Length: 128
Image 1 (cartoon, one colour):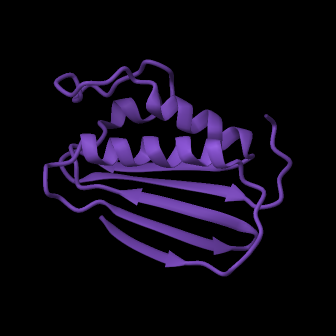
Image 2: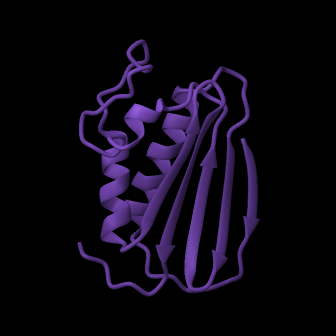
């Protein structure tokens, strides 16, 4: 794993259990859908009263027809049928991001990999 950080010491109103769910599911998918021995990139940036977490893998990628459904419960990308899973991880991530009042974006290319970017505001009152 390659890690980079551009953070200033700051106080943030982030729920640790939800943040763990977000990061665990993102890392799990990076490892699950990437070749063994490949590098997963993870970065954390704090700026403008928000935290930005980004994961990038060099895995199988998500087909364009599946991108719009990737956060739906039980949806699995059409090229992931040989890889174990139930299709719940990304819906959990999306719900945890929404509870923080944040945003998640995905960029992907078949055979190149996938990048997820999660932006969470520091001062939002959590909707838990």
